[in-house]
Amino acid sequence: MSDPVKTIRIGTMVPGGKAVEAIRHLLPHGFESFEICFGNETEEQLRTLAKQVGDVLKDQDAVVSCLGIYGNPLESGENDLACVAMWERLIDNAHLFGANVVSGFTGRLRGKSIDSSIPRFKEVFQPLADRASVKGVRLAFENCDGDGTWRSGDWNIAHYPQAWEMMFEAVPNENIGLEWEPCHQMIKLIDPMAQLRKWAKRILHVHGKDATVMWDVIREYGITGSKPFFFHRTPGFGDSNWTDIISELRLSGFAGSIDIEGWHDPVYRGEMEVTGQIHALNHLKRCRGGAFVPNY
Image 1 (tube, rainbow, N blue to C red):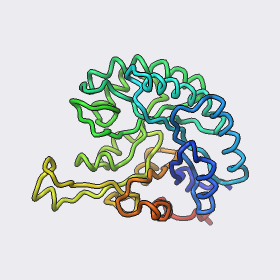
Image 2: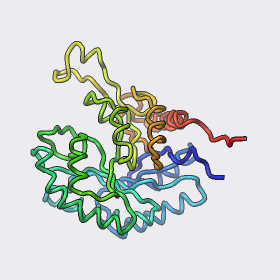
Image 3: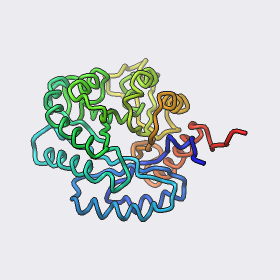
């Protein structure tokens, strides 16, 4: 009997260069999925890694959920053009990992407003979306602002609902959507639940990252002063109600993975990093409803 609880898997993100080592280390603790993040690997390196990861996951109840590339494919520098090529390689090789989602930043024209980047977004991602459609792959754009605003930024335009509307109008393919997490909304004082209820149908992958908003700092100093008013957290240590988030995802018909985005928590870091991630894994599993028990 299949496990309906695991229509939403709980996993974590691992770097491509350490994917085999990381997955071997984490599997015994109950991680169910892995997003593998890449830089500028060659086709041969991807094929080799896919074989190695497949060997590690053989006979395990865990999957590669997603392949990630987080650069700026909209600009024209050497690294930016290499990022576009990496999107292409990941799309072409996702099936070797058993994955059907490739995720990353949209990129943006540096120093320009979000709407100024839309024509270039269409120019780059229309052919990528078409290429992915032929391969049975979906493209998911992370909602990280990369310290950008509507008016200016360096990395990404996919962090406002207005931008999503413009993006999906410019590239109307059904195989593009969002890689969403509540943290990036909360630190802009946006209610993640209201946003989730509206946009859940466009969410293809979820990052498990949380935030703590220090309302006492906001009340005394505001949000533009010298005192930080938020910090990123590993799930289970922040303000998000993950029970509500997962319930809303289930109601929307979401089937995929919540992969923990670690390495941000100011407390559970360094030698405590994996300890914090395992707490997050178990917390998210409880919020998911616990172990499946068949009906009588």
